[in-house]
Image (cartoon, rainbow, N blue to C red; front, top):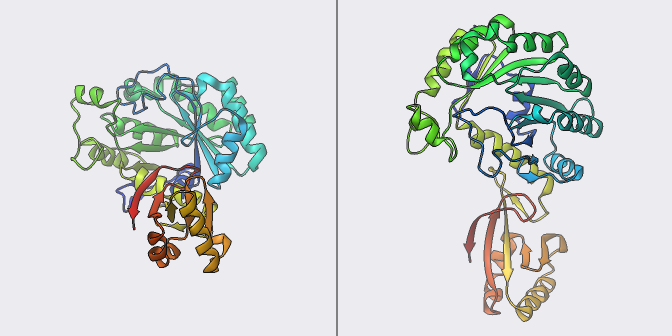
Length: 351
């Protein structure tokens, strides 16, 4: 086994697939193909909004037309896409369509990986390969973990390898994971282990299986990391992804990419990928005064924007002009929000 390297979030690995490498850069768009699934995994964290529903999302944006997906990919300057669900291959034609669309739009170098809990046959694998799939991650249910070499997954994995598709297994760090690590090493494929996490939809199932929270400050399940460590010692090309990672690295870096692409001249981009700017609110008379004041102070037009909700402006200019603006009856604040159109406001600081 190669030496494991650990990062600041508690993730560790001896091997990192290209899909995971792009994910660590925040450069992977998440394409949620469908919430439908034939499995009933007790640890499934899928939200009530999506579970069992045939919906499509690009990151958090609902996809109703191709433009919704492509705009979201461009917004974050995506270098690749991870296709997930539910079970994506229940909608295999949809999967093939979007792989072709992404490759045609962004080029062959746009890396695409797919998760599946099924063991697709050669015909399906050929279609995926022809469409341009780069990486396939199998998610066999826990009941198969002790005897994978005699399951349909072993056949499907070998077929994928023969076609030249980069292949691995991705599972939560649950008891039996060390058996999967041994199988993956023998099959010469990579293994991704995710620290088990509690969610609103799986908490009851996890509790019924005897799992509890690691701490009051974490969603991680107690003991999952230890299982991951043991499995990694049994494997060769392994990667353990901590519960901390998604918020601490993946989401933050994705937000940073979006913020850098969308920030206006007067938006300050924070290290967490949020935007900070000033806001002037008031009635017609107050906002007219504010516009006249900005003009009189020769504030460049690129440093503010008049909207229906008020005037958005560089926060440092707002601080300089807050006395005359307050005296005119306007309401002043500094806003921090996510870098999307009408993005969620994180905090409001009144002046």
